[in-house]
Image (cartoon, rainbow, N blue to C red; front, side, top):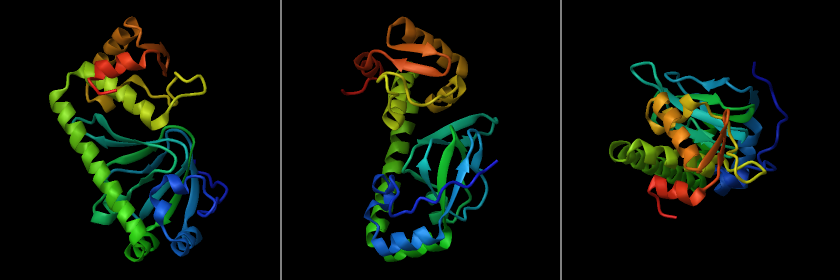
Length: 236
């Protein structure tokens, strides 16, 4: 069940300068603030479904969200992981397409919905925001190209190590400085890697034996960051 959360104003939002709205002019931020709708989603709840038409964009005020696509075989493929300050739903809205993926809350999440009319109007009039949107779209295209290349060329072991590092870059660590600050199932990790769940379970066990990680249910601790970097075949 969705719930309305306290309407944090866009002007005072802690995420404003971490998001695409960082360069938006004050008058347009005020216009967005007047029309936005703030809603809370419980863990596992759907923000929007693949195949639906967009009526606006979503800005994550607090929490974590996954964007996932349903394959022809019915298997989920996680496309992106999102955090506080991230905006989602903009690609489909700007291209006039249906959503190409579903958005699901990974934990209790607070989201502000910005209706299509006000978002498009502001985008047409605010060159700063339009430029930030172009940068955002370019960055997502680059990431998609890199992921496609890695799926085609990298062994699964390297891809799993890279995925763990990507999760760490996205959500960081808990207060202990080693536990990934998100709870993902083995299946969800496998979907990010692009492999079978069984392969992910086996390789995580290998990583544990090698002393790179420690596993406690859905909690994953990264014990040897440099070794994980080497395994991922990435530059430090």
